[in-house]
Length: 534
Image (cartoon, rainbow, N blue to C red):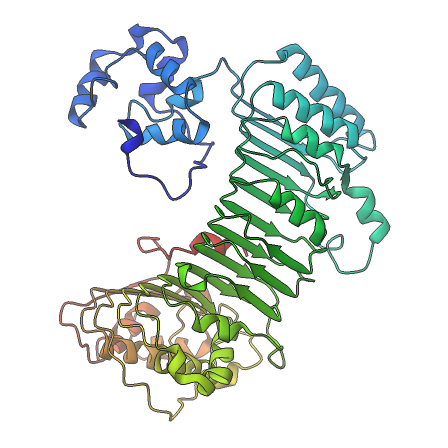
């Protein structure tokens, strides 16, 4: 019955959540902890007979479930929420990180401390997760192998190994190569044989490690579903073998992996549904043969080749390049975009829009396929008149007849070299489109410049079913030109904006315009977390 509850979008729930009062008493694991108060509260939310059982029995049930399903039982009722933390004798989660005041002997002292704790705890006692943050003062080849073997003996399901995050200098393309090698712990091939002994391992995070390519006869990680590699020294060949050894992998995250050049996901990864690539600066190509892929998120320099065997199955796509360029690099990205016939959630940056305007006019008919798009987010690192025309051009070339939510992140830098264009109104006519189903529009970092106002006017005139227009205008982004408007009778900038926006014609009579200096996060785009990370 518990397994029929609605699945969460991410099974890895926030492990820092505090236990609710109804669960805190269950540490004693006695039936007396189920008091009449919690029972009455349970009836109010529709608890069933399983929920009425004593905590000792419910904890036994949880001990029979994999970690992700044990976490999901929190959706049953408040009395299940957080109870999964107590299914093993404490501590059910181990986390080790070095103090910041350790000197040159930081590595040796840290290793000795971890070994002492694990020795006292003993082998074979179940744990849900093990997290090790290693100081960068030495190599940990055999230490990591030993700790992974301990985790395997305890049936760990979530394993995280981190060598201190590289500094900006350490992650640059060329400088400090010797120091970078010293700071990154080497992981020999034998490490993967130890990992493969973790028969319950479902989630693996490796950061700052030098990963040698595993041998071809490596044992498969038959339970691993989520793999995250951050700032890892991993080659194309090593990545292919690692992924091939994970037949049930659902999610793969690659960030700051600077050795990757050609990222290839073979058809053997048939269960992979999510791929994230962030700032892998040397990458040139990505080739995806996984037919189950539904989510693709990419941030960094544009690749020359994007190849998807089943692009029409992608439903969630994030494409962003964080840095401006003097000219558009060669890429087949626009062609790949035209094949996203079933995408439902899409995020594009201003450079993506420039690609569409430069290449899209050559294949106008191919763009008329966003019939399933429900949510669009535009990340505008710049907002000149040319950028406004790019937005108009996108809606002219790419029809979005079912669009329901539109989020636009405007630039926050008032010192943009193109700032003089902000106050110039372009003469190009906005596209003749109809946002029949558009209900929510949100603009962040709004400054009231003429092209921003023109964009709002266009949207209000075309959205006949609009329910909410949310404009976030932080006061610290205001320039001197707006101080003059305040002096002319408006008590503050938001009042001035409200006055200006109220004069615009609205296609929807029920549209509510909300202005605020701060984002209350009432409406969040699907990709808000990805955007905040990058």
